[in-house]
Amino acid sequence: MDSKTVAQTLVHLNQMAMHEVRHENYSKAIYFFTQSLVLEEKLGMKAQMAESFHNLANTYLLLEDYEQALRKVKMAQMLRRETDQKDEQIKLQQMEQRISEMIAGKYPMEGVEK
Image 1 (cartoon, rainbow, N blue to C red):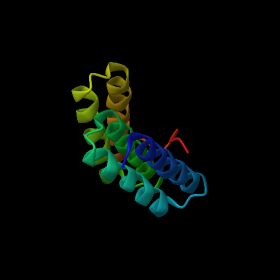
Image 2 (cartoon, rainbow, N blue to C red; image 1 turned 180 degrees about the vertical axis):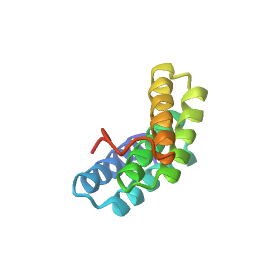
Image 3 (cartoon, rainbow, N blue to C red; image 1 turned 60 degrees about the vertical axis):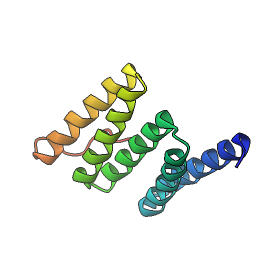
Image 4 (cartoon, rainbow, N blue to C red; image 1 turned 30 degrees about the horizontal axis):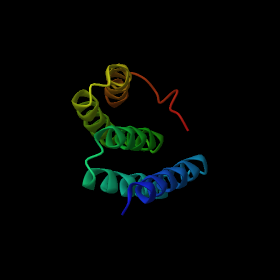
């Protein structure tokens, strides 16, 4: 697959995933985000993988599957550290803290992006 085709495929998968999130078809969104992640992993695209894990975490939050969301946030954090994306690391640390608080039952789900 040439780089243009890869880029188009990734854009398409992510557009489809976001479409499904907007229509509350979260299992389909997870499918498309995961397909994107598989391709990104094959190609060693760590920054894009971090974004896919972040998107998956948000989707699992919408499903109120906090444990799965926390796993995905931690994967995104690891990849953001590897790619030295400090601003994104801070956002993910805050997200991890919020999810941990949700798991502990301290806060209801608020402010999750759709």
